[in-house]
Image (cartoon, rainbow, N blue to C red):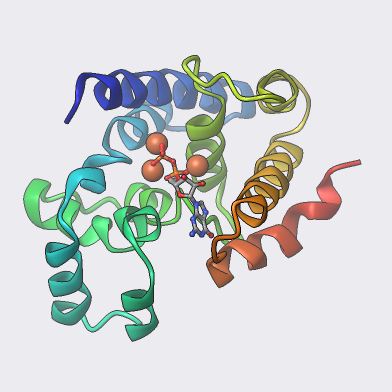
Length: 176
Ligand code: GDP
Ligand code: FE
Ligand code: FE
Ligand code: FE
């Protein structure tokens, strides 16, 4: 992967470890490993993703999306094939790290949020996101991230993956 992405995944691993310790995830080294692996499939070609959707008979609607959605939901099959990763908690967290889900495990939330607040992120509001994530309320951090991602995608006039909206509906009221 590029130097920039390698820096990002190392930052996410560090952030995930910190969140695991803060929120009492019992296996912090798994959080760290999820951080290191989460964007493994980001540079996989579209052709390969399309083949994987076919091979594993995944939801055919996935064919209407792109790398942003595929690198987690489909990328996890590439990670399992290439690396032999089998831990179901880690694979699930990586699978949904971009779109979330309506019922996220502690590790799912840690990875989803770590990706957003890692030390290299500089967007407006990252200070609020970090305060929620590292200090106040991990569910509120999930909500904050999802609200801002949905608003960002809408402002760009791009389609929003339905599972992202389910995440939004499940967590938005955690933001007080
Ligand atoms: P990254 O892999 O570290 O860059 O971060 P993510 O995996 O969280 O997100 C990758 C890209 O997907 C970002 O540009 C997001 O804005 C975008 N994204 C997140 N959710 C959705 C969605 O529901 N639909 C679409 N089209 N893009 C999304
Ligand atoms: Fe990603
Ligand atoms: Fe993310
Ligand atoms: Fe990432």
